[in-house]
Every structure is written in structure tokens, then in C-alpha cells.
Length: 146
Image (tube, rainbow, N blue to C red):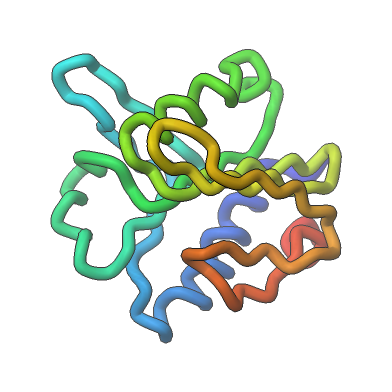
């Protein structure tokens, strides 16, 4: 399995190369996401994306649901049950959840809506990773795994 930190950095760099010229929004790595301050619902995904016009929810952390969160599966995420994070993200209004699984060489893309998963796609490492938020993103996992 490739080292996770360099993989996260490559994914973030590629997303920024795609997002910045299109003025789609902003990408952060390892920033805390506070979904519910009162209930203490806080996540720290590997990558967080907020669309242009909503960046006011970001200060020292993201205060509210970002538009997309991405996590890279690792032994620590396996014990923390991704299903729980997906349910939280969906319940609080995150639009997309990406789970990059380097060991299986695949990416699970989940479109979230109304507290559930609206659409789920499992991409192999050769298929370009595109979603409603990134409809013409043409990078595959194989290109990021190097």
C-alpha cells in the first residue's frame, strides 16, 4: 500500500489543479469539520471541499457541512466504520463522500441527499473520477497512486 500522506497530498494537488482555474471552490487537507457544535459532531477528513460562495463557513475549521469530504482507507479508518461517517455526512448535508481504497485500487463515490445515499458508484483504478461536483474531472486513481 502506498504511504497515505503522499497519496493525500497528490489527490489534494490534483483537485486544486482542477478546481482553481474553474473557480469552483476551495480544498483543505485535514481540517476539522464541525457538523453539529452542540452535539459535538466533528470529523477530520483527509480532504474537504467547499464550493465557491460558501467559503464563509471556513475559519480555523469548517463550521457546517462541506460539499465534499474524501477519506483514504487505512487501518485506522477500518476500525472507525466509514458507514458511520457516511451517515453523519448525509444527515448534516454533505453532498459527496469519496472513499479512496488504495489496497483494493478503487474509489467509492457516494452522492448523499436527504439523510441517505442517493447514488453509489465503485470505480476501478482506471476509471476517471468524476461526480456532479467535478463532472469533467479526468484523473483516475491509478494516476494518483503512482
